[in-house]
Image (cartoon, rainbow, N blue to C red):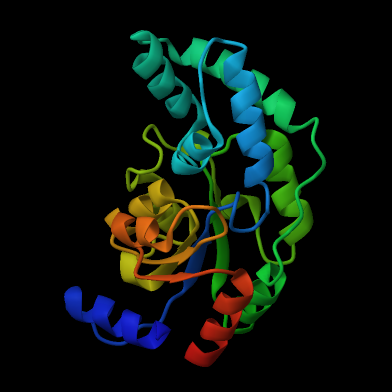
Length: 239
């Protein structure tokens, strides 16, 4: 199935052999089972500022820069265009609440996928809407065998976050100035999928959250799996 979807992607873009040099992973909900914690932190922090945000809202806006999400909901519910500084202040509260919670576990299959990619000389890269220093430090701690700081894109590397293509275009640059068809994206959220697909990169959805698969397909995913372990099997077959 994966090979068939890749062939359709190649045909659409008028390309020949598919030989990826990099995989660009989202972080939350792809590498870490952290979204339940983020949903709680979003709800509690925004409530302090008079903003209503549900768990469904947290999943639907996952992947966007936190300050962009905050400005969106403040505009929607209060009709105000708040400054980036004010949004950052609110985001700092959300960050504090998140870091009072237990550390989110790594999803089963993640390290196996990275081992497989490294074996085939495919670089590991992370493109996240987060800018939280402790989370970036944890990426290097957990995946330092495969990942370097230079191959991480954060919220502060781009002016426009997901769903715009900018984060994944920056990911291509940091991966070695690659062309879109020289990489693959692994995402779990609609905004992230849209970002990867709009950058013309082959985009794989891993649906670790409560949204229907069709939401990811509608956002542009070329194929959707339920778990990273399923992706590991598919990549092994592909290679």
